[in-house]
Amino acid sequence: MRSIFYLLIFVSVFFSSCSKDDDPVNFNLGLIEVFPLNIIEFQENIYVRLSYEHPEGYLGFSDPDYLSLEVKDSRLSQADYYHLIPITPPNNNLSVSGELLVEIDSPFLFGNGNTELVNFSIRIQDQNLSWSNTITTPNISVNRE
Image 1: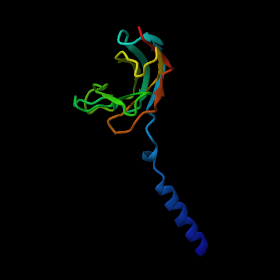
Image 2 (image 1 turned 135 degrees about the vertical axis):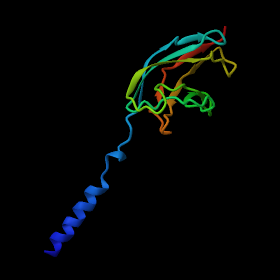
Image 3 (image 1 turned 180 degrees about the vertical axis):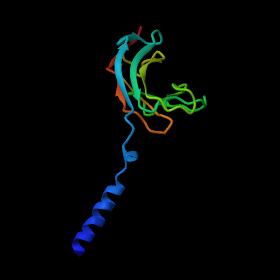
């Protein structure tokens, strides 16, 4: 009888510790296209078209000083950060999905060669301060004129 009592306590504690709130938010980015893939330094910008999906719509910040878009050049150790405006109206919890076009200023060559390959890693932070998955562009050839 005592073992059944302990078993019931264990089972009730186990199920009460499970909560749906512990599930992570499914916040995803996808890569649609990158163009151009072959550029001349200082002359052409790079465009990255992303798809996004957030079940709560917490993308973007009303504070223009909050930088939530991270773009990292594979040749550098530090990323650059940019501001995203809110996708949904304030104090609303709406599932959103859509596309985002990121324009990256024309990269330039770091070395003395005539060509360098670069790719960019991109992710977004939501209003819960959680980061999306990271997407990485294909290699882009940067050429000297």
